Length: 460
Image (cartoon, rainbow, N blue to C red; front, side, top):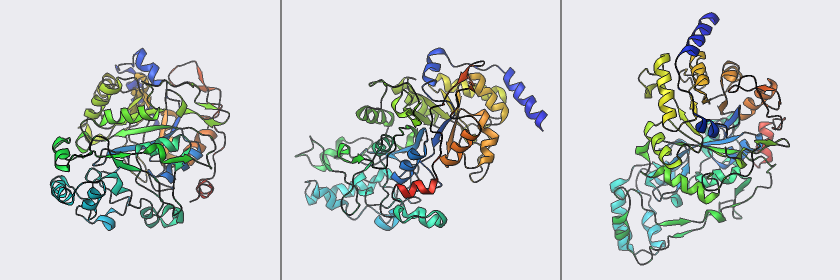
């Protein structure tokens, strides 16, 4: 078997592969080698894509806080995986499967008349899809519990602090956690997020606003959320500053200008390197992660061909971009050396610096797209290889040396493996993309905190 694998790898190495050009390689190198991407913060130790999961991942020493992107009815970009919110919230209990009962009064509270509000609710029903993020205002989603489900699904990992304290996250929240902050809360533990009617809508009716709204009234952007007042310094912050790794989903589930909206949010937060170049160049210093202060602070990702092209038009290949691979998207094109090389070329031509293949193994049991011969082709292309998702030491043993980064549900396990096997906290690692040269990440955190003790320290 080993001989067959070796022969396949050698054959792949001889296949013609387009190599990343110099300008793209410069952007690729914004990303640290052997990077640890905390997949949804953690799907194992805490409710995914919530404050608890991302604060935990930051304190563990992950290089990136990973998330998926959705959009609410009022245009807030969520850092949340599922289009349908039933799996990770109590939305069914709170709202049922119809238009939220409080929607009419919500409109009235913003200054609209009762008649206007009733008529708008009737229009809302025309585009309403139960439990889907785009059918709800973010102000409504703030009523949901995004932590209790985890305790019920995983009683062996349940924690009292996960219930009634975890919210559906906005992209601004994720950036705040990466920056060493946490949510501001009132005396009862509820998050503080001021909102008001957007300037310019005073005196207008909902009928007038709806007529001007985007995509047939699906998105009604009337609320201004003051995210600048939503956070405070995290007293448990120990100084790690990870980057963020954010995924554009299929275009049909989000607004037509989704990529531009994300560009603008990054810009407002000071995280858009195209408008605010990074000042630091070291990924690690003094045993702390500093990736979030460098040009590699943001990595974009998508499975969608259309989203990759749209993102490339907005970000122009100047922000690191990962093209994720899933077998069913490619009709067998990932199963031969020639067609796999064609996929790599297409990805490069449309702005990707990184490839993200699925890996096999429990508990996800994805199909294997990071076999030796496939990884060899990625290496020849000079793209980075970021497989997903790591849950076990066996998966690390299989893929660690083939990979330049790791989407992991267990940052603690992945970090410990890399340290123990000399791929982290070393000044003499063979540079996989520059043969004969060495790569150093000697200043990375050398200790991996205990996962449970870290959650307890953070108040969960």
